[in-house]
Image (cartoon, rainbow, N blue to C red):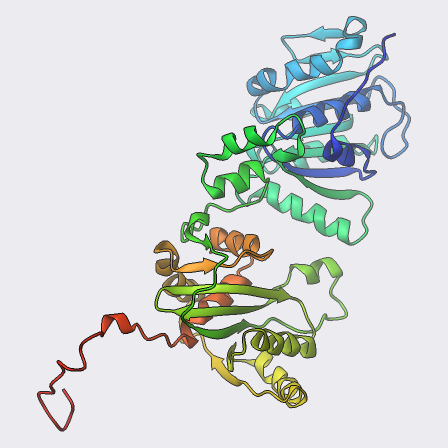
Length: 434
């Protein structure tokens, strides 16, 4: 019998060779995700044992599940036949029903979740769920997962992100379990650029007319929520040149400092981070030099704040008022004494405003008018992602919240609005000055 040969690029091979039982892959368009899925399924159909070591006979099948059967026949079926082409003469291929019977007698079936009942009654050793975001969220837990139990079978979830939905939830679940050392779950991301078949010129051409938010989602495989509608990625301008005029300020949104003993590492990593904004405020807007962020213990947080202040030689530091600020005060004082440099700590408050209102009023108008400029840095993508997601309940807003606090401590005087008025001002009432 002819031999099958699969030529996988680096990111495809990384997923293929990973030993996890359940793999969740967020992949950009034309990144090779469908090729990876068809190869995995073909290998699974020819395997003699399942992921869990169960011997496989002809009663165990494999399944390629797509959002609709019709779309699967159009997009997946030709690729499945291309992958098995060297041995296709030894297989039985049933075009109408989307069934391939391999030489070993095992079956591969194509399904669509537009007919959920068609998925019931099978015993599977491996399943691919392609474009999982477009499937009903109950399909996995209620139908597919039970069908893998006898064989201790495996599954590949793959698709291009589209907001923060059940695909996002599953990706984050896999990511957390992977971080916790669970051998059954793994999460992967690979962009369109991972596919060496797409050259750089073509990539530039493909993205030329796309919004930056669409590029992040479709090309870079980022989970960008479209539910907020408060900010767009294009609202934030990357500007490497520092403005000549302006006043340096530091704004801090502190998070908790310690990790409770009963909290797992993965859960701790989902918690808010402390965000420290270093901004130069001028009549032309805000230039954000950097946003430091992390989950630090209290002394490290105080040190990060003072180091940020020293980096731009400012004495104006605003920190959200509350227990976190109270906890930091002794450390800030001690470190200022060690450094021989004192800064003014300005307690910042919510002002009895909802977070949505506070962030929207402080940032939306400025951002839309191009008055928030970002110095290039690794934190740019995280801030823009949080802004595009806001106020999605599944997303963090630490960096965005800290940035909004700049509004409370900025004391920019827009002198251009008052030029020439000194010589014209004549009070009507000498006592009150009006």
